[in-house]
Image (cartoon, rainbow, N blue to C red):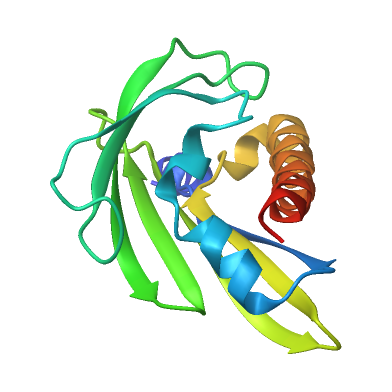
Length: 167
């Protein structure tokens, strides 16, 4: 009985939340102009390809799109289609999407939040919440977490570069 309980606990996968912030040298209006164009989720991204809106809305709560999602080098999984929907939209402040695959256990959310602004600069917070790698696979979990955080930092740098074109 104890062995079964141990195996069950080892298979449990906790939801994992990762957070990155960056000070971007542009006003919140410029940063929001970039974030509110949902096509940015498919640009310059090694994991997201073939962006296509699936709803008549192209911004705001309920806007939906799909992407082809690749997992390498983080996870050794084949690519698949993901359905994305805006689940939170506070103009000038926050956008959150829920990204789901046909496999029930594969999902994550991405949120971009304008935290503060000062002297024409904006602090942007990027939050990803997902079903993490099981603790029993600790080395893989640590490696995956490191790679996701690295991609998050790259995405924030991309936003800063793209805002320069909008300013």
